[in-house]
Length: 502
Image (tube, rainbow, N blue to C red):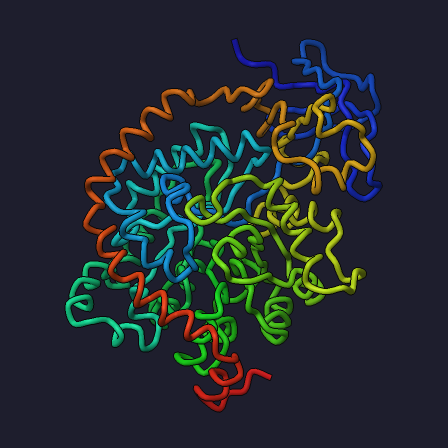
């Protein structure tokens, strides 16, 4: 028997960000889309499925504007690693991956996200030495299995980290120089061919594609232009780590004589489908350029602190008319996938940057970034990010009898400053319950844990040599890169060339 097309949610309180309240409302859903929102007792067609949302607060599914599926198998693996050491550790923490591992890593992250109120994510997924149709499909299947939406962007480069940081290779001993050859990536034409193959025949409905030239100076200009052209041809977004660390900014000035954002713009990559990840070190000119082009920034405050990159200026971004989304970043550098925590940190980050409290980010702005801002970065702003007629029924139900919500004063403040994911009672995506009464309905977590443990044991053996190599590289990279970062920026900016940034 076909499922009745209508569902009616009764008895819940619907969050209104603008009014900062949560008033009783019923929601009528047809298929996967919200048809009508009305007062309690809203009429519904006979035979509609009824969902009782008594004592529940209903808010739009959160949108994770920046994560890395492969990182979920690396959860909790490192402690003191700045970004540059994390990149050096990549062959150790991400090595030895089978097709099943690629699926498993993405599945773990998707499970965590939906259980913590997140219904869509922008996932930058790397495969070594180049992306594959099978790998991307395995990751997409993981999101489909869980029932979550995603934009999956193959994260690509044609230069290794050691080639990308000016002067670093020369600091390595000849023996180490030879060993880091093993990090070498595929030539850009081969990588572009693989991406095109995936883009041409993509069978997944809830998982869309994008292109992620990982870090600008890890890509030759020819490769970045190829990424731009692919995105144009298939009408896809572009997502890149730009000015995440000071080392990146310095490398950009040494390589291009300009900021990374300015260089990408000069190549034609920056437009309304372009997302900057992090943007901790964007200057005023960069922000204006991104805002003028209608671009987005995925703000990842937890990861920025965890990796010691600094505090991004979300107020500056919003003032420059940039669309801001909020992300968790990958589980190997964040280490959870909790969007409630990311919102709380986004709010707090703005508040420690200076005493001028009128410039601080409000909880309403934070929540907007974690819903509509993220939806726009994913290119889904006409479909998700709001609970409104015509939008997909992606709804999170919080338990108002949970201690987090006693008492219920201002629901917007509470969502950003109090909620930590533990009051998530149920999660609906496209009209379908994915989490109900705190239980994930689509994946068996005990089986998932067993598979993850098998994978961990096997990969630990396979990646042992890569771990040893990391330990030898740690001292060199760990002294050279902070050295680059310690010098005042204006020296690099003007020492490299005569293209003045200001």
